[in-house]
Length: 202
Image (cartoon, rainbow, N blue to C red):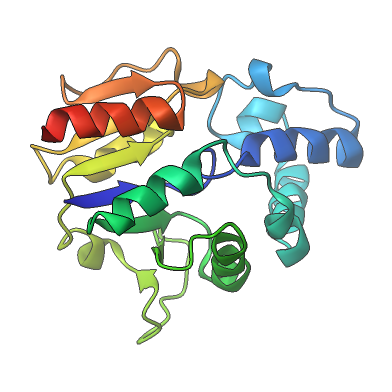
């Protein structure tokens, strides 16, 4: 079994951290539960300059390392790996965030999981032979049986896998999203994800 897992807001509580950063940096109080958009500039009503400052701050190594784990994530992923399943963390974080992201995984007991930075939006300079950077043409050669994702804007990256089962991690910004087909299922925590995948495989 091959499983795709998104990083931010599936493995760790990135949006909660950004909500605090926006309050500290710009005095804007937008609680996590009121974040109705995946697009952070829109969610926090930021100018272009403020948005750039927020992304820069939010991707500093010490900030990335401070994000809290989403409860149960590492335990479920390690259970999958111990059962012989192939788990890949595929993130839209910039390639320069790889080292602190890898360190975060290692600190949370996920030393055996693979991590890839995918150039989803064409903003990166491709790092040849890095072993962890993916352009879309590389990604589209990969096959998965299940995916764990929170972002409606990422659903289009699953179109090449018509049989993929997508577990949508419930977040405020995806509650009004229309799912592309019956293969998408909303789940509320990692225990629910674990049970759903185990049931579908049985």
